[in-house]
Image 1 (cartoon, rainbow, N blue to C red):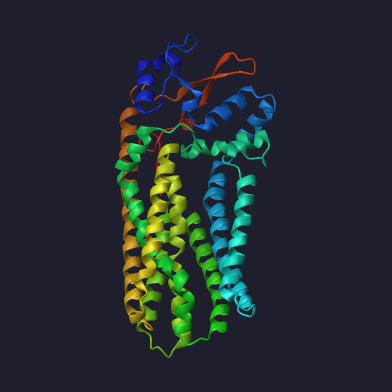
Image 2 (cartoon, rainbow, N blue to C red):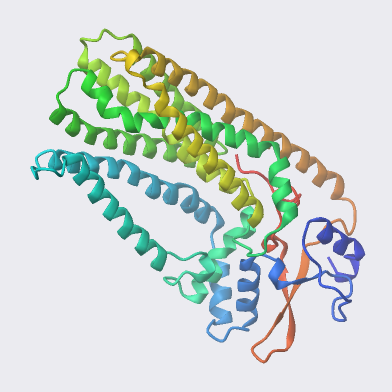
Length: 424
């Protein structure tokens, strides 16, 4: 569409979307909004300057070639499947490692320094080491990733064109913060995070639970390693199913609650002398953990706008902490050894969590339908969209330059950007 068809309505749309439009008219493009580079997504500035060759370290032809070779479907599969799978499988690996470590420290005899003190000291030191490595070596954005070449960074951010979610913007935006607080899905996410993480109290109580099944301390510690293997298998199955099922992420998460629900019921109802059955039932309840793994990835995918995304993450993680804090209070001595009350609550948690996920998915599916309907109504109108925008910046000589960027790189929220579609 020619620039002349994108009249003042384009600027008004940009302003209405919470994007600051540079003051003054633009002689080169009088009908196209020109934005301050500080108010748009970091990826917009990076890709635009790289593509224009402003940064002398980037080969514009190489960057263009990488963009041409970019495969959005493959990139989405890597983002959705491999990354969360690798990160969350480490939970299971950590449990296995902790089981062997716990078995080892039980054999340490050092007088006044108890085995549990050795365990907390060792794990504390490992955590500190990982924190230091993370601080110095983990990049804060794909645009500053030290292990990628400048051309590869340009190619990496091309996935934003697909989901239009952006990377980051250091400018805190009040309107995005308020939008987060008034967005119904934010609080559905928060309630789900709080409710489903009541199950996490199993992590702290698992050795006591298994010990009450009739296993001694040493065997209980070694059996804890199997918990890690079960969690690895559960997460792998759940994430793999979610990645190959079109628009089936939430359905895959809900299905995980089925074996978890069966496990919580069997632990509470099986005869107490059937140790093997109780143990297998307990392992089935671990399938209640993978849905939160899928959920965390999904939250980032359905929330756009840097301020809104960080605020949403803060609310979700606060709810996550609340659920973890409340969970252990269910395990009281008067309920042992059968613990009917905690296991009954867990059964309810599985049902409630599944319903909350389905509610969130239904809400976003309805919104997608509304936006598709809007797009159909506007398709016959002229000048209805602002796909061409420019950012204002300085070149190496300090002169003002304008660089065209894609709308997908603007720091718009999922509500402001009506072209955005929620992945389901």
